[in-house]
Image 1 (cartoon, one colour):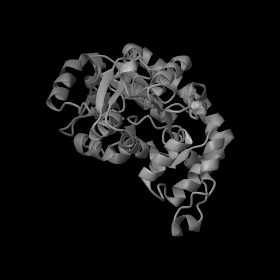
Image 2 (cartoon, helix red, strand yellow):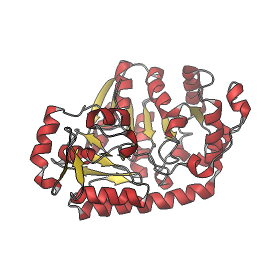
Image 3 (cartoon, helix red, strand yellow):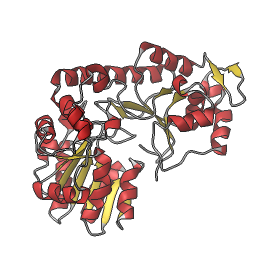
Image 4 (tube, rainbow, N blue to C red):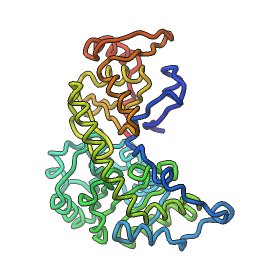
Length: 366
């Protein structure tokens, strides 16, 4: 099983800081949750009765996305099931993207082809499936709509699929291909985890032509989503005022993080409304140095060393990150002693040595 961001228990054990002392920027999940701000009531029926498909969730999602959908237990459920709906073939995806995709296709007997963004157009005619995270995680790479639809048409002409995982797209809905999913061979995956701050609810949607949605539903079986999660998801999808507020503050926070990184001499190299990425040889050292200060980030090693940072929620969190970047706070070392350090570049060599002793798992990419 792969590991993913947000593993605070593991961070507590490794760095010896209590859970409540951590600032978790490792997940790319919005720090502002719909449920925390709306306090939606959950009916007793949602706990006592089996979930029912005609409770209004599918309709609320169809209104939000503009097309018919299949509710699933987070997009992860579809990620695991889709490879079983095709005979083994060649599946292309960007190097370093969300690792669950590659793992699930490989387990189903498919050959996974790692691609650079520039190589997709050349490779697409040799693929059976092209799978893209859009915006990409962790690079933030996006593709022009016309280019995506051209790839989809070329794949569909041979019975192929274009799968687009839009986990990070809600803040930029104009980039979505949701409205095109009645096309044969186009599958879009959406989730309430990142934008709505509801990752624990495990609610997602598969958008595709009716026949494919039906085949996927057969794979997943009944009662895929718990009743309380269904109620919360339906209310969140209908709350257009909150969604507009969320988009505004995510864009503002992402721009602020971009500027903060630039001011610290750590310019962002890719990102989206929910995260920014630093790419460079100091990524592992920076990850370790921040963790010593109780700030958890997401370290990647492919296709090059990089660090993904999510958004701080409060002014105190922003100040804490700014001070950590400046190297002006005490860092807690493994021996329990507090010391004052200089800027990160002065510690890069030591931190790189530490990282080499305990290297990151190359598979961790969520």
